[in-house]
Length: 369
Image (cartoon, rainbow, N blue to C red):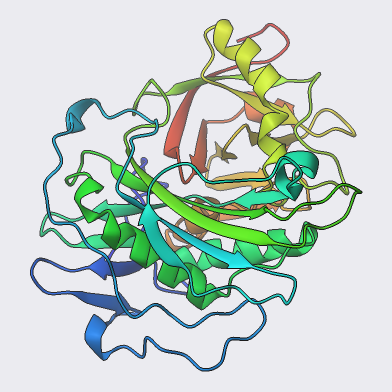
């Protein structure tokens, strides 16, 4: 069995996750081509890749995978976290009938959007983030892609959008990774970041859901998210700007959540901090999350993290860390966590797809470090 998370002291020592399998084996050692799901190994050619009639927001699975075999001349040692143009991207459309097209692989590049598209005018858009990793034997692993598919469906419902089925989402991710297989970094040199996008591409003028939606997946090889790499990061607690409010969209991965943190993040980085930790908008004393990741506070044998109540994104890495911690005998509390508890903690760390697990080295709150 594969294991879920990199080691982080005693808390995050590698251990099997509970409840469901963690990894999906997308590409086994060359030259075989198979998929491992729930600890069973299947040949791609033996899988039922054609489904029945298309239903609302469901599509038949693609029967072929574009693959490239050439090597990539890239400086894997200094990858960083930024866009590297890869070979292909996936695209599918959904019209007023609610049916997503089968989707296709196209060369990576610009897309055409009307100036009156729903995403440009009213921000009707969602995105996801997940990663593919290469093992030492050359096989490629995906980390819990079904969780991303389900989270996109939850977000789409909140944003009045149709969403791909879990099956189409996972199949599209597999197609995109295999089409860009040569861009998956060598073991220990990074990962292939996968960015699914769902947006209102249809034209609107009055405030209303778009009549057409586009589902896109592109990828880019990445290294560490923070410039500190694996070294502890430095956070500043923000008590003036707020990331989300009760009743808003903080709990779904809509594009607007991220534009709203840019000002506070810019100010923090100009002062030398790695990122910003936000407090709740009502009491202004309870932890929410960092700009792009969840936060955990360790005190003795107790690991505490803010509860998911509509203002905090339900992170997939967050969920996995909770599973690991419980399996290792820690007490995990999902609740209101005050900023005072944060300052009295034995250890603090952040989790997320991009940041993976990042230890926190310092926290500054109201001028005190």
